[in-house]
Length: 185
Image (cartoon, rainbow, N blue to C red):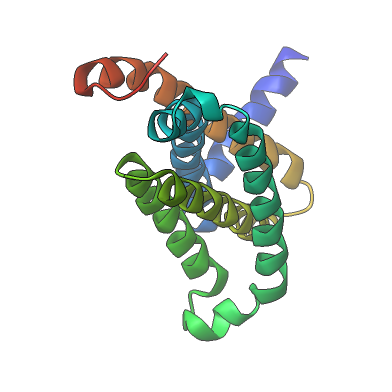
């Protein structure tokens, strides 16, 4: 059983190292994990700092708006993913995926600089719109890049990459928060 598991893990590692969309998805999944954990760790504290503690009840509404926007982003990506072929001339969904991911990182940076509660909520909901769209395009790329026999293994690798990014964010985030003085727990 150990030899079978080792062989399977070696095959999955080899798939993740292949050039092309698989490597791109694994690398950007680590980055997405960093972005998502960073967002979810600090957004409530930052929004309350802009609004005041008496507005805590708004946090649930904003969180709900984020989830609604993730659903809208997913639906838009499903409907408009094919248009990416024309727009990104040869790069198709891969180009859209890269643009969505870069946009997420830009919005995350803008969130850190938000100066009003309205700006923060707008950027937060935009972030979730982009995350929802990114997820659909990412899964399409991954699905098309591997064979049917490899899909479940690659889905696991991609999931581990996202969680690895989250661990990285947690490990680096705490000392960084203390160093630069952002709101933290």
